[in-house]
View: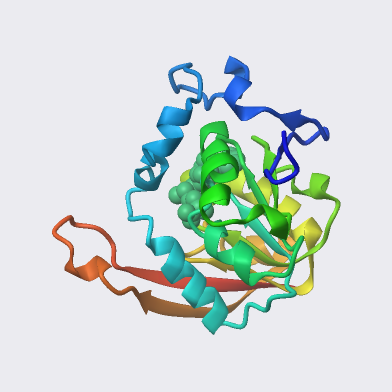
Length: 226
Ligand SMILES: C[S@@+](CC[C@H](N)C(=O)[O-])C[C@H]1O[C@@H](n2cnc3c(N)ncnc32)[C@H](O)[C@@H]1O
C-alpha cells in the first residue's frame, strides 16, 4: 500500500488489507462478500446510519463551538466510515485523530475512499479494527473522546467495560462528548472516574425540513475525566 494511503491497523499491530480481507472480519450476521471498489464508489456508506451524512458536519460544528482545539488528541469511538472524521482530520494537527470500529467495510470506505476524496492521508490519522474497544493499543492518551450513538446499542455491561477502557486513556480533565444521554447513571460514571460537566440541546439545520421523519435535534452530554 502506498504511503499516501491510510492503513487499517489490527490491535496486535498488523496491517489489514481491506479489499482482500478474510470473512472473519465481516460484522457478525452480515453476509460474507468481498469489499469491492464498486461498493466504495457507490457511496452506500453515506446511507447506513439512519440520519444523513451531513450530520457529521453539524457534529463537528458542535465540537468546535465547545472548544475543540487543533492540538487536541481525539479518540473517535465507533468512527464508522468517517462521517465526523472527514471534518476532524483536516481541523486537527497531524497525527491527532484516532478512529476505532469493528466494521471493516466502514473502515475501508473511510481509508480507501473518504481519505482520497478529502485528502486526509497527509494528516496521518490512525484507524483500528477492533471488536472490543482496544483503545489502549494506540499507545496514546487523549484530550477528547467521542461516543456518537455507539454505546447506545450496547448492554449496560458492555458500555461500562467500554467506558472503563476509554477512561484509562483519557487524560484527567479530558472531555467525553455524547450527542445523547450516557447509558450509565451518575454513580456508575463516578465509579469510572467520569462526571457530567455539561448538557445541552442542539438542533441542526436542514434536518427538520426534510420529508423523512428523522431526529433533527440531540441532547448532548459532555463528561469530564476526574
Ligand atoms: C451510529 S454509527 C456512528 C458512526 C460515527 N461515529 C458517526 O457519528 O457518524 C455507530 C458506529 O459504532 C460502531 N460500533 C457499534 N458497536 C461497536 C463495537 N462493539 N465495537 C466497535 N464499533 C462498534 C458501528 O460499526 C458504527 O460504525
